[in-house]
Image 1 (tube, protein in one colour):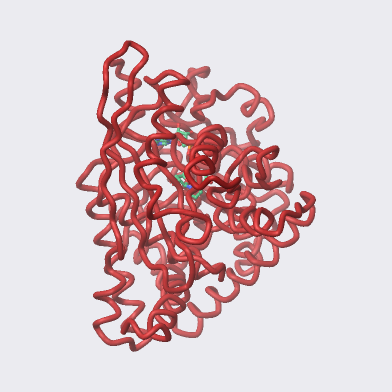
Image 2 (cartoon, rainbow, N blue to C red):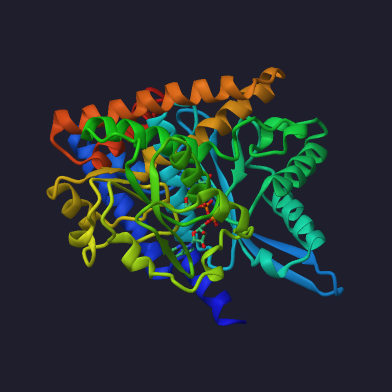
Length: 429
Ligand code: NAD
């Protein structure tokens, strides 16, 4: 394995210790949010872990004739509000703890944007970069057969995540439709348009982040026209976001990938970089005058968007962040201690569970379109997403102001309340 490949794998999802920390940090904030809302301890006991966690073994015939046994997971955090919903990650470093934490985040996101789902998440320990197209197809179909009893359009609806895409969603939908003996486009979202996908799904996360940046800039009195923006990560989320910021008249002065960062105080040529980046979101290898990711995060700018991986802003560097606004497009880029430091320094931090909720919102739109069999134009999707994100942002901003707390705790309060209430009305607690 090359050094680059090792670096990319480690960088992509963090160490096992970090993943355990992410689950613990999530549980800590859920506990704080429930306490603030005055729910008794049983609610925390119910919500601190997924209701169901299925581990499956998937035997796959490889192209060379051998059989390899893969391990997969599906977590369903809470289905009191409605079916669970969340992506499937294909990655060599997937762990049970990570899938659990991600399913809880999905519940919070659905509560925040007020869509009728609970959170779910799935993962398979594999390296899709070392598998052939047909091996990937067999693995995708095998995973669906293994989890078919607990998923379905009214039970648990998967979607793409790290290293899974619309082709994989298409195979999974086809396999489920065969098992179900019914054409079931609503079984999964993130599908190709011809199979019932939605306009705007691919760029939905970045669109939602863009709306949050605009709303946060208004609160801070920053004009987006000419504002200096730094984006860490140039994959699906970071690249679309850089483009949207550039098109809005902002100056994107820094971007990065796993190998380094590019900086130009006069603004980078985003269209050129988009044209040159590869399918894994790598572009900096073409340049020699790069800076490090550490330096990138500490650049003097107005808006900083971590859009790559976990644990990037910690107590080590939180004092050196010079942005006025930090918007978390990535899941878990800021530790709890760093959140406290940034908030104490007057930096407005828009948390991941709000900022990156545009993806699940448009996934919900896709499912609604599948259920009604009537499809919306791109403008209609954009208009509906705009309404949902603006309302959610302001609800959380107001909660943070009213309770004098940071926006992460405010977002958890908004996100957790609906599943707690639904669990109570169902008589579970
Ligand atoms: P991606 O795999 O398409 O891109 C990741 C980018 O981060 C790449 O440019 C990669 O080179 C870079 N990167 C990897 N390690 C790095 C490191 N150590 N330092 C700096 N950059 C590094 O992933 P994505 O879909 O854009 O997701 C990025 C983040 O956004 C993840 O945390 C993901 O969970 C979150 N997110 C994405 C979506 C979505 O719809 N894509 C939705 C919600 C949340």
